[in-house]
Image: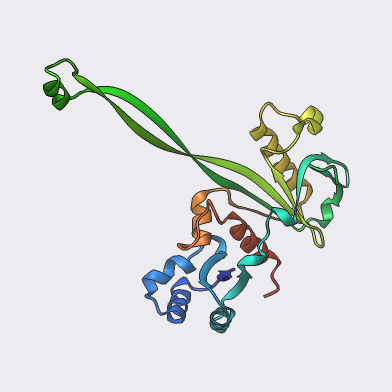
Length: 256
């Protein structure tokens, strides 16, 4: 699948909406929500099964002055091409990072170009069965009142949503460096170690932002509404987080 997104949308929104509506054959009312984007985007605007229609869409958007990204859904950023950190140490010049298999990676603060903070959303379904005895008229009549009740089993289903905060670090020519709140060993923080994982992770992200002052900082992926607006109606925040991440990163690093 080829996925087309726009980003850095600038100019008069009414005019941009008219141009967008003309390209996709929709009303300006329908187009406005895809063009009037916080920070100018990015946001997915179309997806295609084949390259040809995707190329035509990109060309039409370019012709109207929209900056575009076209992504192959088989080439998304994912855990197979990431460096997932278990332990990190701050030094004067940079980070020392250790992953789960013991591989060491050293990164200078000045080489970091983007810090992307967000949160994955994991839904879990729990089912609970309860059995109660209820008065049964038919059974009471059939048995002359000897059996008055019957067992009735009901199932209650609850859906629980859990946020999994993360911070991705981007350095040219290196795999994506991933910090996940639930997977880090915070004992390496020493005297800076806080009382909770959340407090430790918040401190790490703030310290990264302070030390990497030349890097871009993006935290739009922390809430479900922001994810939903970026992904549009076809994709969803629970299943398509890697797609959202890939689009945001390419919007920063694209040369379009």
